[in-house]
Image (tube, rainbow, N blue to C red; front, side, top):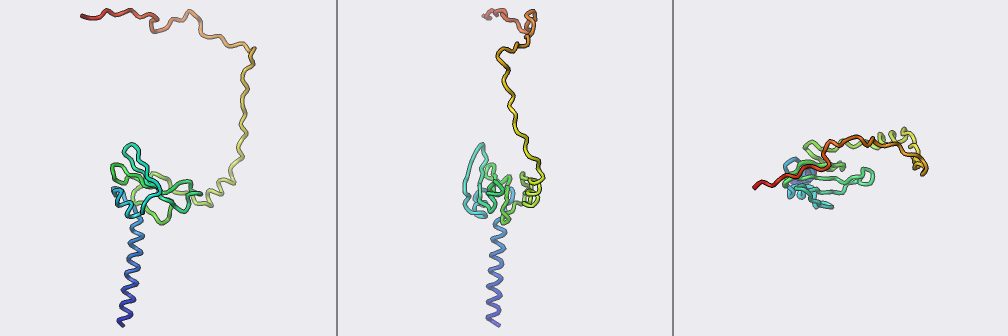
Length: 153
């Protein structure tokens, strides 16, 4: 009986630590940089510009998604996150649209029409007459020689 209780306690501890680890991978608006790093670990890259901090994290689909996971902070407060990794979650509203499933993306590529070849227009021939410009009797709306102003004493 005592052994069963200790096994149950161990299983409960493991389950709660697993849930805590999953919960720790959730980012919410307003978290500071230290909280984000505690939750997600050290970023691959940290970039700062114009009061914003961008924390980049590796995900499993960087090659296929074309983007790392990103957490954006302004004044040390999370304002946005873009996650493609299924282990990471953002409780706020992300600026990124939802990822397109691979089967949908593949279907879109096969249905696409082939690209039309680019055509380069040739330059006009050197002996081609040019179109005449505006007539010379048109007066500009701004005087060509404005009157000089006298300095005030």
